[in-house]
Each structure stands twice: as C-alpha cells, then as structure tokens.
Length: 320
Image (cartoon, rainbow, N blue to C red; front, side, top):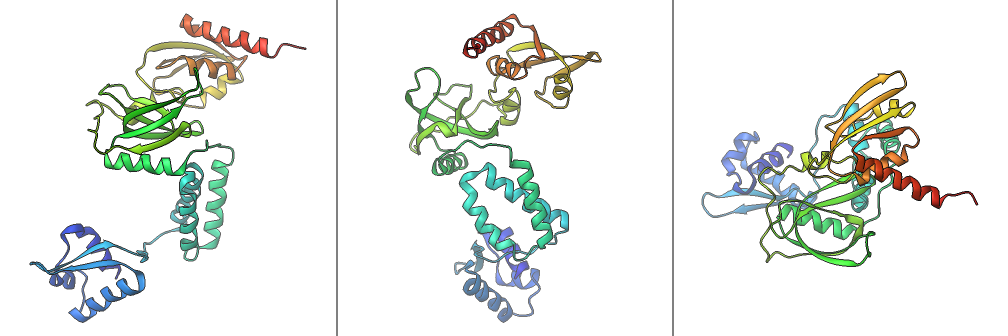
C-alpha cells in the first residue's frame, strides 16, 4: 500500500494504468491490487478514482488518513518534534492543527525523543513573544499568495492619526521578524513593496476579479527583507558608522545584524561597525536600547535622531 500510494502520488493527475501498477508496485495479480485499493478507500478514506475513459487508469485525489512510513533516526524524530512545537508558537493560527497532528504521531514516535523535542522547542520559543493576529485573516492571506489573488484590506496603523484605511494590493510574500508577522505587497503598479503588520489588519477579502500586480523583475523577498536592521526593509539608502564600547561591543560582534555590516576592532574596549541600511528610524531606536554604549559617527541625521530621542526620554523620566 505504501508503494501504491507513493507511485499514485507521483503520477498525479495523469494517473496509472492497472498493468503499470501491477509491474511497478510488484503485485502478484489484479485481485491483490484491488484489495489494497478497497482497503485504502474503506479503512483510510483515501480518494482513489478509476477513470474509464481510454486509457483506463487509477488517480489519487486524496491520501485520506493513511500515514506513509519513513525510516527515521532519533535526530530525525527530535527535529520533527521540535519543528512542530515551534510552528505552533510562531504560527498561532495553526496551533489546533499541530495539536491534532501531535495526537497522531505521538503514538508511533519514541517517548524519550518526543519529550526532548518538546523541551527543545519550548527552550527556543519561551522568551520570543508573537503578536496576536486574526487566524482567518492569516489563512486568507496565505491563500491569496498561493492563488496570486489581489487582496482588499482594512489596516489600522498606530502612527499618525491612527485611522483605519482601505488598501487594494497584491500579496508578494510574508515574513516573521521581531515578534510579528508582516505582509509584503504591491499596489497600483508601483515597483516598491509596501509593508503591513498582520496584527494591524482589521479585515481582509480576496478580489479575484482584479488583475494581479506582478513584483519587479529583479524582486527577491529574501534579498529585500535581509536589508532591514530589524523590520523595515528597502533599498540601502544610508551609510552608517557606529562606535561601540564594551560590554556592548562583544554582544554586537556575536550577531549578524545586517548583511552589509563590517566590524573593525579599534582596541580592546572598542569596535567600529559600518553598514548600509534602508531606514534610520529603527536604527536610532536600537541605539537607544543599547545606551550608553554606542555613539554615532555618521551620518549626522542619525546622530540628531538619537539626540532627540534621548531628550524625550529625559523629559519623560526626569526625577520627580
């Protein structure tokens, strides 16, 4: 049955003739083949249809509840269990699906490996918050991505006047960074992707009647999103240079913050970090979060931003 399902899956819509199934899956006769097909249909709810148009053939529409077995060592099991635990954390809308899958696989996997995998998943996610979002909206966005379908959404940003705004756009991708999921999308044939935080989308719906807006020819989500210091991606518009002292110098050296970064050790207590970034705003907030160990060498605009933020913090936290 494993060989039969694997082969039918491979043949996809084309299907396979009886003689081909007998030969490839090594059945001794037609009766044995038909018995397995009957069992897969009745016991495991697999949807295997027989097309009578010439050439007559079997096609697999759904594998039902039959679990194709594979050889797995202990590390494979731990990887599977750990990944399942992390999926349920970082994709909250799939939590119930993960729990249902747990109940299936827990019976056939070694208990010790399952426990260790669960612990490892918890260790990786316990201190990583994930912003709340509407599960149905996330599902709809992923569907639109697969179907290349235009979306209409209502978005509420916490900035400016915080009003709800309607957007019609084509989804180009989603990514997770800094405790939240983001949508990259194009609109009005513009070549620059727009960024939307999923937790701020109030409503969304598909607009299949509208023409899908294609991304630029050289667009790459991985390349685009990696340009960000934290969240905000884009073209590398600013060259920055920071001077960082210990203990922050060691902490910064341990992490790849940006693909363009270069770190130079000036002395035993100081490093200099150079990079090209698309946004200065989030970088200024990161510098503030690392106070008082980072000073801005260039550009002057970034230095002024940090100074203004420091002044506001002093005003908000002045001694009473």
